[in-house]
Image (cartoon, rainbow, N blue to C red; front, side, top):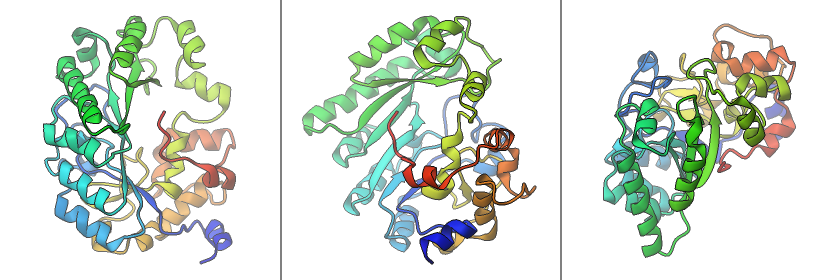
Length: 332
């Protein structure tokens, strides 16, 4: 297949980078979580990818060079994580936990493995600088545990004289935590983490009060302002993963992108040929639909997503230039 034909019919070459969720279990009860503890349990399920299945999948797909292992669940609840990271390292595969972790419970072996096997980045969701504020959204979580585990990672980085993993302090801004932003920034510096904001995905849930401050710091007070100002969805980057970073569930379901919570494009890629699955008729149609080359179709899950609806509303279709320059592993 030549590149021109691939662009024409929505097909892609076997990807070097994938998202492979290795655990959908989670011990927290965050109110807005779309993961397996809530209404989307029938799609994601609750479970984890075993070391043996990870190895078998990589044996079948030796062209894979980068793997994002986190999405809906808490990756550190998979007891096979250290062996999975070691196997990836031995295969010269870069691992990332950029999809997010809460780090409330993590074995020392797993924390050491992050450093020893050079996981590139760990993004930790920390939406407060005090226990009361943190646990308002991260229900059931203990900030003390999180801080201790981050400190352990930093200790291992010193022991191994390693700069990896990069540590990201992710702060979703709500009304209950906006007054702690400055303290959270200081805490991030103390923990040797990069501080990043995220906008709440449902703007009328615990909406921020000091909207001007967010505009000054971030440019937008909520996702609606972001959409109106830029005429593109806040989650547009997720659409590009259908080309450069396709999402696979722990049980082999092909979800396509990390925002898909409505169904799957292939029931089990572990049992088939990954390249063939990624180029099945619906996946190819979804890509063409996102580029404005095909009309909407009800069996394509993008139809249910605000990302696609905003693309269609603003006639702002995914372009070949975006696909070509997309950086699926940017650490921000």
